[in-house]
Length: 216
Image (cartoon, rainbow, N blue to C red; front, side, top):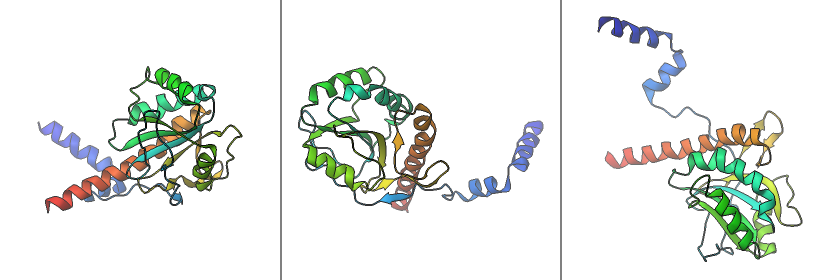
């Protein structure tokens, strides 16, 4: 027992001072994911194939655009499903939303069936609307990416509970990083994986603070 006591004390002594202060204080010391664009256009003019309404408000959303033929983007979808969706779908307010042109319902259903083999797709939503409405949502991101003529994009975006676009102001490769290239497995696994962890940690901390305040 005495040996164990000294071992624990030794480990604590070796911890960097900053880590010790962090654990002792319980304060929020992690970096927050910057807001790049405020008030993304809401999904009022879209619905799922079963007429379900989906909204950004009060959800943490991964937003994407798979165009007229979503099966052409199946590799992108698999990257996202394996590295982001499967790991985080248990978070209560987390969702994936893909804004699709009307007429792509059957192909979207086929892709969803394939994704369901990776993880249950209850929080993966395909919503459908007119091309002009898709352009409004995409343009409201104010990113430096271009929506393709078939209303698709290889990039996916993190939208917070207030419908703001989150990203990076000082990415080591591109400077301002609005979204993540779902074709690039490493970018999804590393950069996007890290940023999703950060924003989920933000909301977990806010929830803990809210519960603590309620108990006072």
